[in-house]
Image (cartoon, rainbow, N blue to C red):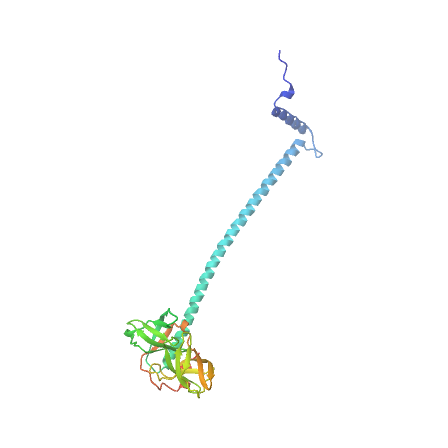
Amino acid sequence: MKSAPDVWQWPWYLFAALTVGHVLLISAQLNTDRGVPVIEDVTFGTFAEAQRGISAAVGGVRTWWGDYVALQMVRDDNIRLRRELSQLQVTLQQERAMARQSRTLSRLLELRTQVPLATVAAAVIAGGASPEFRTLTIDKGTADGLRPNMAVLAPAGVIGRVVSPGSRAALVQLLIDRNAAVGVMVERSRAQGVAEGTGTEMRLNYVSGGDDVVAGDVAVTSGIDGIYPKGFVVGQIESVEREAGAFGAIRIQPAVDFLSLEVVLVVTSPPRLAVGDVASGPGTQAQE
């Protein structure tokens, strides 16, 4: 005959369940100091802690989501503001360019009204690529009356001459080209010579040793070369060297900034030696 199983041989989970059941029964019968059953107080505390944890988690998620949405809105606003700023900068540059072009055209028109010569206005469409040959291309040619050796002017002074005109465009040799030369006169002392290009500036040659030439003097066209009308500014004497009573190197800084040229005037009428007094001629008035 089999004996009853020992309680210690029961499965452990069965034992645990019985133990918990006893604890619950005892807790249901016992009250706390506040008169509340222990089991109810424990259950309430447990659920309260669980609710507090869930509430904190939900609040954290809500706060994180709100911050994320706010950051996205700030990011979108920053992108929009950067686009608006870029557009405003482009617009400002366009307005500055238009204002600069307007000032250039105004000075060119003023020069054209002062010059007692027939001229044609032309726009600069390209610059020379070689540093050895300093040239630029304009948008007027033989169809507009341009011919070789016509002088080209800017409000600040002389630019150069037409060397190769096409039907609708022309190549202009700048004064600083190594093969360029122009007859000049020192405005103050009337000393004469020939300004020749060096690639970046000009040098005044063939000046008599007894002439008065000092740094700061203004050199203007003399008109003796038969290409450039008399009295237009070529540049300013930058430095003067003397050797044994004779002139050495006399450097001339051109009056024109060749890199910033946009529009020019081409003199289409033959040059005259008497355009006006050099001291009050149009080249002097156009100097900046």
